[in-house]
Amino acid sequence: MSILIARLVRLRWLIVLLFLLVVTLLLVNYRHWDNRLAFWVKQQRVDAAEQAQSIWLPGYRAVLQGKPVPGLENHELSGLTYSAESNTLFTVTGKYPQLIELTLDGQVLRRIDLHGFANPEGVEMLSGGRLAIIDERKRTLTTFKLGALTRRLEFADLASFDLGFADAGNKGFEGVAWDSRNQRVLLGKERDALGLFSLPFPGEDGATGVLQPMSSGYLFLRDISGLTYDARTGHALVLSDESRLLLELDEKGEPVSFISLAGGLNGLRRGIGQAEGVTMDAAGNIYIVSEPNLFYVLRKEPAAPAD
Image (tube, rainbow, N blue to C red; front, side):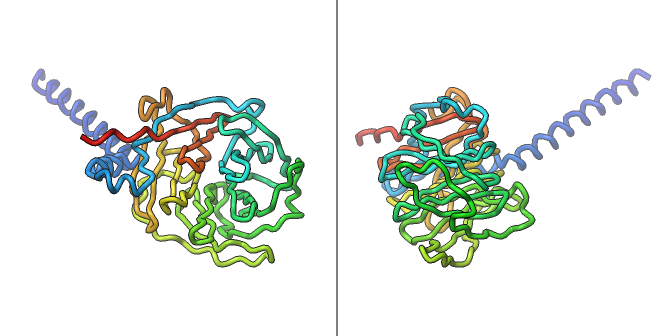
């Protein structure tokens, strides 16, 4: 009897261990930790010359983190873009639709009410002083120009373009970036299935091209929550809320570098939860906003002197 009991105990522990192993493997696959580790190993072999030709995210550290944007505690920040003309940032809010202009350290300069918008999720500065806003629920890209005194925008009065994917629901387009080299808008679909798309720049006459899927390598991301483009390198940055990751892609859509947005890494005391917008300024500084109203700045550390 004692032998039988001992065997049953061992069998029970074997079942528990097998269960834990299966759960671990499923979690690794769900979070893409295996792919992330494989790419991290590859990233360690990139030489200084290749790093200098890219944005090279491992060189960045958080210098301002988790700063609350005043007065927007319940507004759900989403999307972020940099205006070289004004040297300011713009973000949008989803819960109470507004376009918000910010200083480079996250102070509110003005609020612009977005009447008729349903769920603005992305904003981007285009050429010629024009801005674009993505409305995920309406599945539209809306373009316009801002005056110095603008405090209100009416959706019905603006040029809007149908992005399709009528069945996407709340998993439509969230990322938007302006590819100044190729005069096109880049778009990131959140998930189910996530993907990158391009759209020729909508002209002043309202004409627009056809939305086209972009080729890309394996992105090892759970979702796409933000997107920006670096004209200096021709590379894009893709932000993932669920993966807590910022990924650099080259012109062919292949991964170049990445950093984790988890706490304890890259100068972050705490992880960036619900990261919803990313952009870069002319100096290469990276800005991130997260829900509900938190603001981050990452700056590249000076390269170590050669021996």
